Image (cartoon, rainbow, N blue to C red; front, side):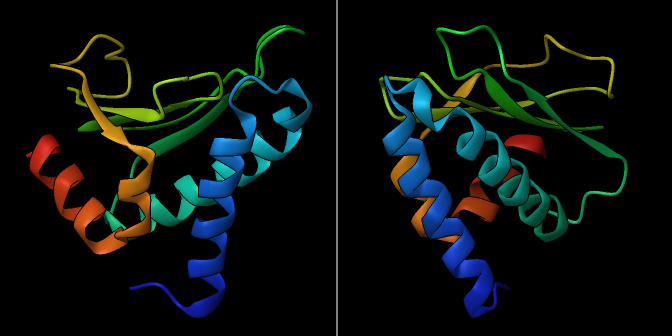
Length: 124
């Protein structure tokens, strides 16, 4: 699934997530790494019609990066002290409410194939 360069990208993003908690000096890196990671995730989830959005928020927060597909909404919030990201099932690109919020610990990103399975089960 992932080549060595992509594995390094995932690891860099995980480190950036932890470094960003409570530290707005990592905002640019959080958004840059987040968009790269979500692009990999979209590919490996076989998503076709999706958007990757980056909301940098104001001066006191890191904002969020989002992958929104016809069936799934994945959001990383740069200020999540609980070290989790959110995944939920949706019905289209205009669905911003969707199903139940599922919070997945950052550490699950390190087991990428299991992460893909978890997300596929949520969006099924």
